[in-house]
Image (cartoon, rainbow over all chains, first blue to last red; front, side, top):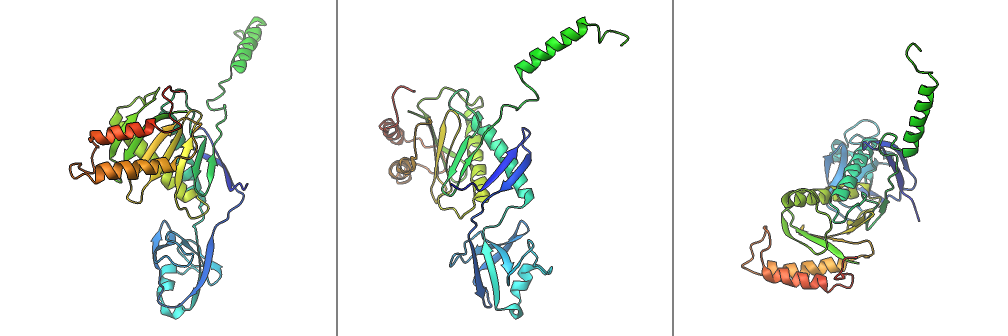
Length: 181
Length: 145
């Protein structure tokens, strides 16, 4: 069993901890000559394959590296625009590595809040009484497990309430917090 | 083991069909809003899953479960979505949902020239065949439990 990643989300939906433990991202590196058989497009600051799926390069895969050097979003390692670079026949033959785009920190934050809402809607749409939110979500490539702790509301704990009241009563009787103290 | 309810959506988010067998709690909102909320939730889950997935997906989102129920999902390449809520004891029922689509929806609604597509299914034949099919499923018990 492999654990891919762990996310900890607070009660407001914000991501407070994230760990990537094992990422079996499928990648393919190939040498191409001009013109490129794939149609590339710019999306969300990344260069993605829009059309022309072949070998193990699928639609939705991103350009990860050119000539062995990792790209930086839509720019190459030395600051040129990837699409411009690949549109110039003088730069060929070129070796490009494609693969599933890795999530940026911002995207992880957004996905965590998204899941927080989906978790709540799963509870609201329940056909049974007293349902929790989503505890397990299954797809054909991964399973997501979610555990919600009891510390949801700010200190909603009976023992704490009782002991606090007792402590206050004791303190009042002892006169420690009377007027003029 | 039981089936709670079933939704059928088309690619535009129109709820083509809904029926319930054992439902103890309503959503607390009008039915139209409930359909939209359900469709929106499924749309967001699909988008969430496609970004989260470590590998390229073939079938995508399959099901989720909470402490009380399990939601099963099946989508066709034409965007028809079959959603069934059951209790927790039910395993993968992709073939059941596929049967509802191909043997019931396609045969009785799509192939019927008098059934307009893109709106709620009015066909009584579809309703009764679907009802008897669901009641005949091995995980459907007449008494909810």
